[in-house]
Image (cartoon, rainbow, N blue to C red; front, side, top):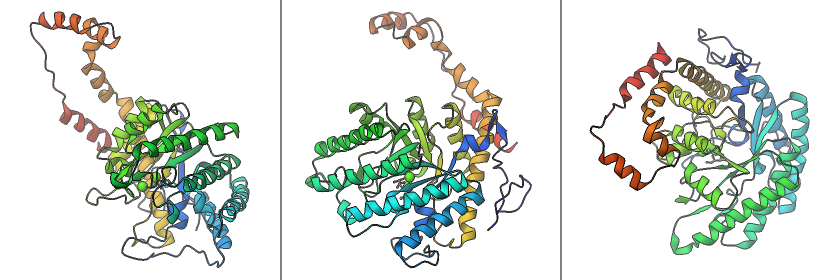
Length: 430
Ligand code: XLS
Ligand code: CA
Ligand code: CA
């Protein structure tokens, strides 16, 4: 496979970029730096595209037999794939990069062996690690959770995996470390001590923070909210729940959020709602870019193709001042019937072009100014007089009652949703 080229919007090729032109500047900054695209190791290099009803439709052993040889071949393919696409970052779980051994020691040693291999590939290509994480949900020992397991030995094994994954992240220069809850949640309170489990989860995150800081990790820790799947009640339900949790346990200075599009919609929110919730709390750290299917009630992890969603996402990213330690990780996999290497490239090209176009249109919306002006104007009553006192917290129920009793008439101004939606369409399609 050859490097994928930028051919511009007129191109009819689906094996070329039509919008993603890494060096093109938007708001004075190259597109590549705005978008910080990352490859998800698990979907891209490990998933055979099996589902609940059927086996995988693609083979990802890369012609090798032993587990270690397969792991190295995956890494080699992955770095060639990223280089061809011009993707500068990747994300992994410990179990994506290295096979599990017979014992915990063997498993952790395998991770270290692969870290050395990845280090060489990083130096050769200039590709960087965005974030690392520990998989504490696939192995059957985690059936009842990891940091929230009812069994303290499982908690200890989780700690060992988290420690190694943090060490690996530091060694590879990762700027983020993710905690996605996995099986941290419950199916029934008939067998669950929720209070103890939540306290233990906080103990794990606190130990990870303290260990990471001591070991020299100066990036961000991220929590990735998800409302359900695999458990009925995932503890990290959505952005607001996670922020409340982090504040309760004093972790909000070191943790930010990794918002996934598909998890947002599973929570009954829009993607933008989750991003905005994180942003206004100063916690928009990183993004898992994908999309779900509104007619299917599960986490389908599809490559993003919805331009509206990408536009609203990039508006939030621009408003947050861009990514610092995070980026846009394609936590996405091909559909089961898309089972060729070409499909893998086309999935990424689709996602990258969707977000590049999203960025361009978001910039256009900001420059146009009509939406921002409308919102600012809508709240003008808070700029002076009583409104200003409310905003500053300088009034009371008594004062406001006196003021309200003196009101002669009130102005109910239209929210003009349809007008605003037309502006968005104008700016998107002309
Ligand atoms: C699963 C999650 C997972 C995290 C990393 O639904 O998206 O892949 O991103 O553990
Ligand atoms: Ca994810
Ligand atoms: Ca997902």
